[in-house]
Length: 396
Image 1 (cartoon, rainbow, N blue to C red):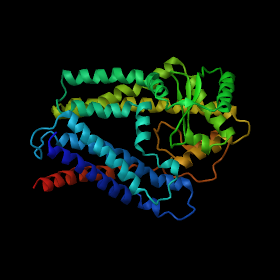
Image 2 (image 1 turned 90 degrees about the horizontal axis):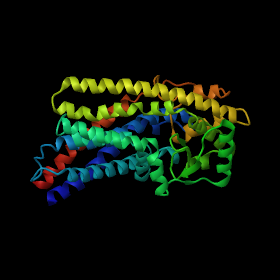
Image 3 (image 1 turned 90 degrees about the vertical axis):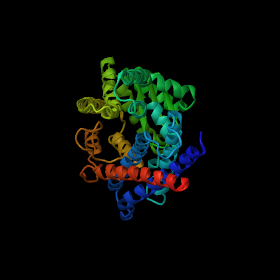
Image 4 (image 1 turned 30 degrees about the horizontal axis):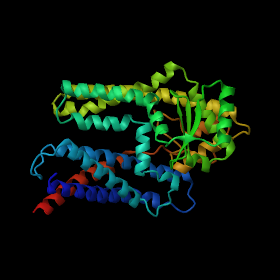
């Protein structure tokens, strides 16, 4: 690798750090200005655009870098794919560090500051569809939409299917990231599963900053995060486990319906390739496929969440336990209490009312993500401009 390109990697890290820190710092000003004692639901609403921007800055900065490196006028020779991969890693590192610096000093729970690199990798293994879509974009946009791009897309889908149907959980077990839960949690989970007639294989835990739980419907495993065990009490943990056990009772047809979003994400992954080939109709077709499949997937997911909530309510010993657990999860992660129509999860207000408790805080207009999207777009464009400017200055 040339010295110029090594220098470009370092400058990409610096540029992504500066632009991410600045954009998120400015975007979080309304959150920082909330008066002391403000209810967590208002803080969560103000934090939603920041979380949106975090994700999009990372994704778009990498995409912009790959796109504009197709004509590498700043380097002696065109960069190889592996060199661009190294720059991508430096951008991710810069975004992670910039994000943490931008939120220092803010009234944000520790369990909501979950943008660490190790957590990001674990999430990508558990939920690999989004990073796989990004990878498909990077591998195909330059060559355009031809038979090679379609072969890569088919290979990506073939890789995603086993990962999304249990292989990711097996991999995390093998890496000892997923470990058996404490004995009392295991016993409680098995009692709940026997009562519901659910095929529970094991209850696992993993060290993760978010307060949450997951059900691996394909392997029969129930996964609790370490933060969930520390934030929720025993009764609340049992209700959360009952919710996830409700998912384990889903039929095989319901499980396959969960995967309906995968072809949609593959379509989005091929959209840049179609655009670079000038195939406008193909671009609109890929977008249409994604929108339709995403809508169907969200509708199905929402219905499954409502059914799982019913199982959690049936399991509670004292009225209101499950509702309190849901509120604790939202408060710890600054997850908005109210979602816009079409969201895969029901709003917290509706879930608490269904659980027999009327929330003691008002409904809010669902958070708008437009601010976060615009901030991410501006930050990603600023990253590219700053990076190329610094390269030109260093080379001059």
